[in-house]
Length: 330
Image 1: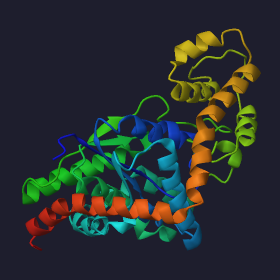
Image 2 (image 1 turned 135 degrees about the vertical axis):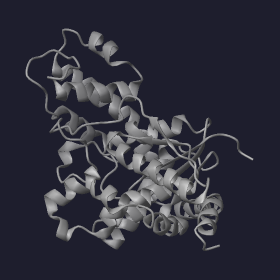
Image 3 (image 1 turned 90 degrees about the horizontal axis):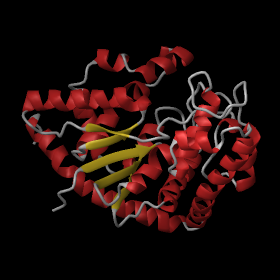
Image 4 (image 1 turned 180 degrees about the vertical axis):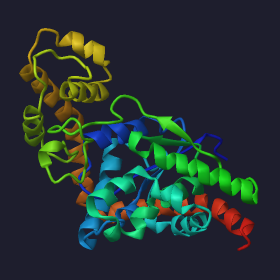
């Protein structure tokens, strides 16, 4: 029996996976494959909280799977699967809904932000309830650690609250998970608006570098990335654009920001961005090439995902059965 700590994480198959998803999540996942028992999910049920074109969603699910594999995630060393193919995620969500509180969910920042922009009346119940599904994703596998960025910390705290509440009500059942703090690159900002987080659903293609962008597109986007006033290449609060670009450079190369500041002392923004573009191209080009190869054989991708789902179903069954039994449904 595997005695390593369990890690759970996932990405929605919507929009275009970008450099922020790579350096903030996938690159870190690849690095921890040997140390932990890892479950890496394509969270397609979460994608349904906003309207999706079914054909496009199916394509995006395969695309995310291809990027996972092309980035170096190995199905022999971790479990890669589609959330919707493990029905325990939806079933545990209902059980946890019955102990979650309306007030807790209404305070979730992401829901409040989206409801403020689009109006509460038009927001789906799924969007409101999304954090409980996220809690189910994690608790089903009794994950000890969850890699999270700043925008998901509040949701992880709700997961911890629900685990403790269930344990107090029904007896020890779930592991209370801890945050796995990500290193440099956990929060990559938009290239054209460094006060906004880089978003894979952004309507502005210039705001992100997609993992599947071709090399010339990558170079063009980084060349056109906004910069701050002045010419000094330093990470400072009053220089958010250059700070963001330095963070990306550091996350890809493994160099520290102070090392990069020293390397580019006295040099201009143009030279810095030209070098950064080549670093990004060098990191992403082989991933893009391999992902496109994998996408030419969707049947093989589907087989890999189904094999992962079967492993995930077996891993999730004990926690779900225990929760059902303790609530009187056994």
